[in-house]
Image (cartoon, rainbow, N blue to C red; front, side, top):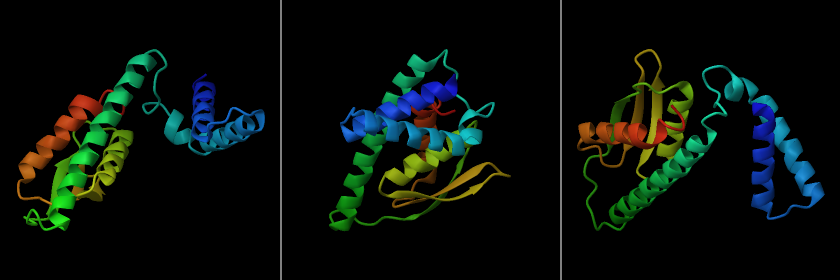
Length: 164
């Protein structure tokens, strides 16, 4: 059932991206979606990582809110990098900050790293699974505790509800 729902949603996303509901385009989208789901089945559908259908509407709303939060972070990061690039703000103290994973699952860690990659001024550097620490390079790492708190707030408030 999860596979079928995922197949339909991915095919719909394909059709929306193409802005075409032509049967041939839908067939191509369904084939690509089925292939993607087949190759990612262990990651997407294994126990502990799968999304229950019961809470799907709440999680979809959470996904929209999380996407907006990431978009705002991207805008903020773009503004900061622009100011530094134009020399309107000094480059304070770039560096690497260790951020504890906390309760994040493997999926949650991957989503956190991806979201941080999208925002200019920060990039994931390494993951220490044994110590459960994420390492990020920040354009301004002058206050590492504040950056850790910011990451924890982002996870607790927005990401946890969608990608624990």
